[in-house]
Amino acid sequence: MSQSARAFDHRSTPRVFCIGRNYAKHIEELGNRLAGARSVVFMKPASCLVAPEEPLVLPRKVGEIHHEAELVVEIGRGGRDIAAPEARAHIAGLGLGLDLTARDLQANLKSSGEPWERAKAFEASAPLGPITPLSPAIDLTDLSFSLQVDGATRQAGHTGDMLVAITELVAMLSRTWALIPGDLIFTGTPEGVGALVPGQTLLLSSPVLGEARWQTA
Ligand code: MN
Image 1 (cartoon, rainbow, N blue to C red):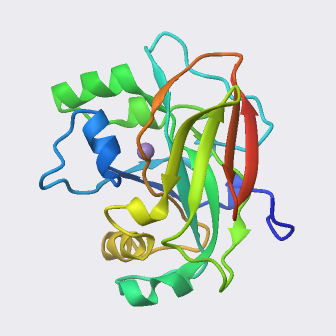
Image 2 (tube, protein in one colour):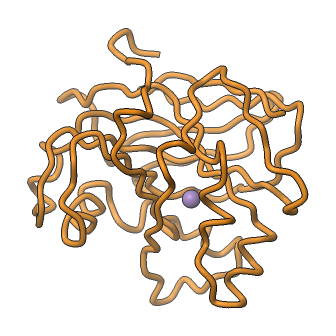
């Protein structure tokens, strides 16, 4: 972890935006159509955030709970209708998080056309590591990150593979919402999603953004 990274306090988080379908190989692994794919936007309440080393209690009796390792953006300067070339100046920092997903339930909700909240916004569904301030040295399009479960790599992502780049995501969200300092954006997951069970050790890591660990329960 970089020395300047700071601990996270969900009470100062106005909103948690999440982007779906932002990596081609993940769209394909879930059987969604890549052609004409459009970003999905959904939200989780900030009460879903779980700091590193806090117990990660998985919901029971809702089918498989999948990990989705994601790069997370924290907004530093708010704004509406932000142009993509200006978006970097609105970003305070970056971290790594998990968009935990009740995959079986999500499939049911998708097929019946219902909203995704029960599959995406459940208690403890958003583990989030420390936020590293955005320094001039950080290239938003050249960040690698990975998730290990019990020491085995499950997901390895690179922000250069995003279908919609980080600055474009900030611009897109700001056309619908006036962004507020402290807003978080989970930017989508690369391929390799899979099920978690109680008793596992999760390690999110990135050469630039450091590490964060949780134990599932
Ligand atoms: Mn996701």
